[in-house]
Image (tube, rainbow, N blue to C red; front, top):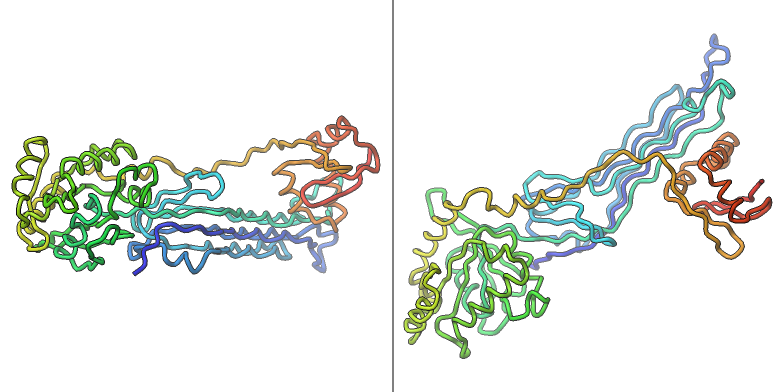
Length: 426
């Protein structure tokens, strides 16, 4: 299985339905007045956690998601139907960021947890909303509001109880293979594990935990060297770290130096990782000379909990698994990394009513730059006379006309708002 832990996708919420221009045409109701219904709301795009998913593989094949638009308004003041939200399933541990700004949009960890990533546009108002004492039968209605669109980057941080850390080729994959049904690739060369593997360790009597074999670290990983951040992001979500050290000193490695380097990489990436509970596993104890190196290691680090094993012969492995299970039971709930996931939330607030804009020049064209007015252009039907008059009133009321005059605009000059150009009339 290919493990995919990052993906970039395009999401587009549904547009609101258009409001309708309609009038009451009942036989015994003279001058019935406007009766155009509002358009329905466009669908949101909502990311939902599905605990059955383990990778972002599906997003490799589908990179574009678009929710449905709301229905248009109908006669007799009937509203158009709202569109259903589009639910996109993601695995637990998915972090969603804006692809342009990097802003955190959601950190999804629990099964069923959901987050609105882009909101659908509201439905346009029918002509009944624009009737007043001067114009009792307005010939205008709003178009639906465009739905939000953005590029998002999905990043998967594994949710495992226990993470195996250590230099390449120290025996992490071998250990995972003998204690669970996981079958990671095992060979005697560096970086055999290029992507994380998960295994469920069952100890009977309903006791189990998830163990992750993570890619080997090297010095400088916190700066992105080797597998760098591709590895370290997964360490953040584990409750307990198992630091595997090669006590056989294969390839002339020094167990003490290996421990120092790995700890330094964890601290440099995130100081909280050094406070994560940890068990040091002295592996390859079946090799001659390992016992002497273990004694030297414990003498330098008497504060550490060190468990000697041989993953190849399974010696000490069962005792290690029991010790891990006991430590997990001892950990208080507040140490769970999932508690950190709610540190930032997406909060949608009411839109500010004041319209902000600025006037710029594009050669001979006066350009009014305003996100609010751009949306107004998209929601205005310029084929309707009343709608055009309303648009002009808004430009005057918000000070756009005065700003254009101050910038030097005179009658006949070309003005651009959004993708619409028109002549300025002073």
